[in-house]
Amino acid sequence: MLLEFKCSNHKSIKEKVSFSMIAGSDNTSEELLKEFGNFRVLRSAIIYGANGSGKSNFINALAFMCDLVNNSINHQPGQEVFQARHKLSTMETPSEYNIQFVRNDIRYAYGFSVKKNVISDEYLYYFPKGRQVKIFERKEMELKPGDRYKNAFDVSISILKNNRLFLSCAANYSNVKEVEEAFLFFNKDIVVYNPEINNWTEYSIELMQKNDMIKKAFVDILQALGTGIKDVKVKLEKVKLADLPQELQIPDALKTLIGSQEGNRIEAKVVYDQFEVDLMSEESAGVKRLFQMICSIIDILNQGKILICDELENSLHESVIFQIVQLFQHYGKDKFAQLIFSTHDTSLLDSDLFRRDQVWFTQLNEERATDLYSLVEIKNVRKTENLKKGYVSGKYGAIPMLNRKFFQELEEGIGK
Image (cartoon, rainbow, N blue to C red):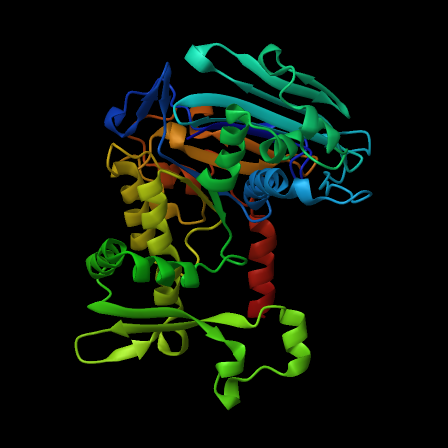
């Protein structure tokens, strides 16, 4: 589970912003929370804000952290670490990323800084029996292992470079269980979805083909959403490019670029009462998006992972988003999955769906830098308040400040 994430100097985020999935003192919907030690942890959170206010940049910062942990081990000598500094920050200002999370009932704290396109600081702690234990701390190229790990990182240190995270090095070149667990959180447990980049259709079809229970659950959800879909027929198979029909053959010049001589052939049919249609060529964008999302969400719920999504509502009806949130809120107690997403859909701003500590906002300050804050931080917001009305009226900030006089003059000019 994700407990908190902090970052600074990343794109529109200049000063440090803090995001937390630890519940506040509010006792609303206590049955939806997960107890971990002294913490009560939220299952979902929603982020609102005007276009360009930094919602996507906040999610991008978390995605950047995951990507660097997973891939910096492959950085070559001289390769710079990408640093997306705020436009008003100097070259001397580091970009900082800090996270606390839980894996296999142990809490970890991890963070690093990027300065002048290299790693400048890094640390990893964990909390067995609630007490903080240092696994390692790093200052530029100097590494200080914790007392328990004095000789555990000799090989890992030998491959460390200023463009590689030590967590990536140690996960691959040591046998320290705590390091491996921390690495696997980024590699396996946290899933960042961007609808403009990710396409999970093939993965979803593979899940349905391998697991009849996932397919049944998928069809049940489609029927519950009133799509009229009765069944789906899916097939995913490996094919040799040379065996493709003549009209689908790939030119030899492209084959050398592809590298592999095999590919996946996908067949997916959507079955209605009186006919069936081909998913890829005949279905609507909304149904295609359901194919991308729903099976993957079922897998995320079953595995107890964390789904982070930018603008979840793209091509999905508001009722579908409502049901997805409900799935995460009420899923089986033996698994604890989390959902964090940004949206413009104000219909979800409902105190019956979200506690106040689950609702977050982004807005730009006078430096055009992102402020991130929770609804809990705003005074005089009642538990039963009409959140949608309060947001649209500007009570919570984080909406476009329209120049009413300008638009009135524009309207009058158009009318002449």
